[in-house]
Length: 192
Image (cartoon, rainbow, N blue to C red):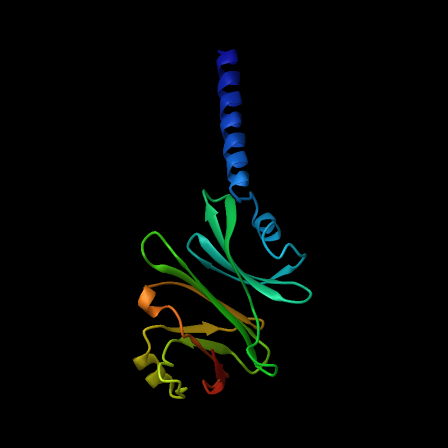
């Protein structure tokens, strides 16, 4: 009886170790920090912001020179994998927002889309991401922007950062406009 229990324990341990080995070979890590450090840019940094969306987490990884947005996927509650990385950057030298967006086609024909912002102006308390700028004219009325957009996301800024995750149809991906709003809802800055 004792020998049978020992065999079962050895077999279970072997299976667990095998699963972790296979996961590691496929880019998965046991801890979130390990997964973040094993992914590009392979530079020491710290988590400046994170938000959770089901089994996914958007993490803004701040390094000495740059901030990166990493989409972290979790499987079985313990295996973590960074599936998407983008660099936050300003479009113009004096821009009040560093921003990025990225989209990956999923098996359900939807695009896993991440939006992220670093607000350089402390007055910016909320960011609106939309795809209303079809004619090259920036709208200033929030209700009008929401009415003409197929994508309209309001993201609160926390400690200077904001991020969101959406699954979008292919027709909705692209031409995103980022608007920084103050505490009263006034648009401070707008740009792609």
